[in-house]
Image (cartoon, rainbow over all chains, first blue to last red; front, side, top):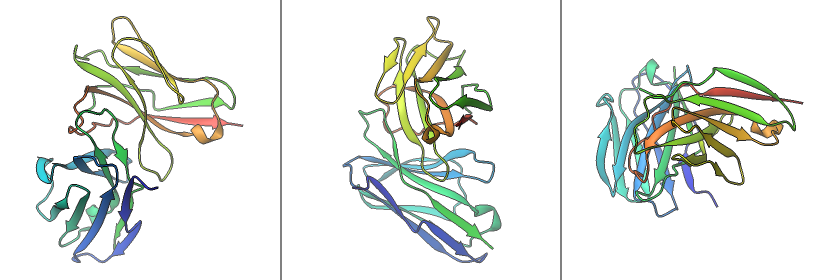
Length: 112
Length: 112
């Protein structure tokens, strides 16, 4: 059973396009995250949602809009894609009382 | 910014113990030491965490110095599948809705 799943695994698109990445967790966690890992392999937090409410937005351009339709899903929509958006995006989830974050397999986005 | 310092890379012979050091000299009294690892092309995976006592689980052991300014993650019998980037992170415990702050980590190569 997959705990945190993301779709698609790979996404290749042209500059200027709009795309979405979906994330689902079946762990019953109340907090979900999006992290970005750039070409230099640095992993950085982008957004954090708790019970469908945005609690952290780390100075991410407003072209990025997370949407949480329910506690089990946190989707990432990106408008007007730029070359610099090329990266691997990881979704994660956790429970407030717990110490462990569970990560998805990642979505490799390539903007041409 | 990450509050930890780790060596960039290490090698370990298969079957031997891998000892990964981490410095966290500015750790606060309520912060724990967490270890995650990222195997190539996968999402980060939780390994272990501790406050001041040594901890052991099925994956690894964590040794924290008495002054808590440094720690060592020990993989007792490294296998080729342990080749990964290992991240040492300091974080307030039971803060399950706060994101992880990743540093550069240590790239461990287990050699046959």
